Length: 280
Image (cartoon, rainbow, N blue to C red; front, top):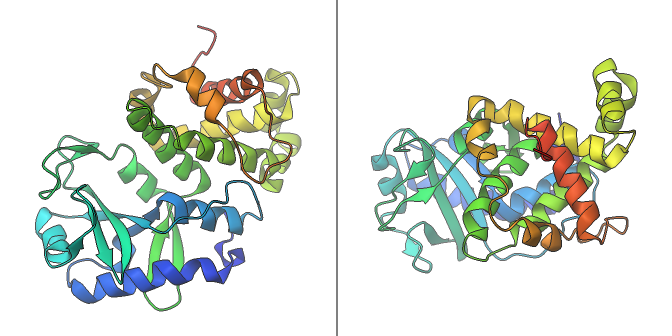
C-alpha cells in the first residue's frame, strides 16, 4: 500500500480547506464518504510514490461523494454558487469544485442524474474504486479517501472512453503517467523479480520489464473492478486508439517512449492484465 505520509504536505492544503468548508455545511456527509479524484488525486499519488511524471498545474479540484440519497447532495449544494453549467461544479472557498455523486444514487449502476445537470453522467467504477481506496488524513478536515494508483487508473480508463468520444484526449497523459509509475515502482520490481507469479508475468512478456509492469497494472485494475471489468474491456479503447497512443505523453518522465508503437505495446500489456487479447 502506498505510504501517503510521504506526500508533500503542501498538496493537502487546498483539499483540506475545501473539505472543511463542505463538511461545515452538511450534517449527513461524513469525511469518510468523500474521495478525492482528478488532478489533485494524481498529484498526491505522484508525490507519495516519489515520482515526477504527471505533474501539471490546475486551479480546480474534484471529489466523489458516496451518497445514500439525493437529499444528502441537495443539502450540500443548494446554497453553493454554481461554477459553469455542468450541474456538478460549484465555488467552495473560491475554488471551482466538482462534486461527483455516486453510490446509492446511481441508476442504473455507473450512471447518475444530478438534479441541476439536466442529463445523466457516467460514474463507472467509482463505487468499486471507493471500496478499494486508502485513507487520506487531512490536517483539519479529518480522514477522507483516495484511490489507489490502480484505482485512479481505472477511473482514467473510463474517463478516456467518455471524453475521447468528444475529441477530448487529456486522460491519455494520465494513463501514461500511471504506466510510468508502475514501471518505476520498487514494489512492482520486487513482485516481478522475486515472486513466482511475477516471474511468470515477466517470462510471458518476453522479459520486457515495462510491458510486464503494465500487465501488472491491468491485473490490479481488474482486481478492483471485479465483475465489472468486462464492461470496460468490451469497449476499450474505443474508436480512437491511435489518438490514445499519440496523446500518451508523460511530463517529467525523460525515459518515456516517444513512439506511438512503443506506447501501444505498453497499453497492450495492460490489456492482457485486464484479461483482453489485444491480438485477437
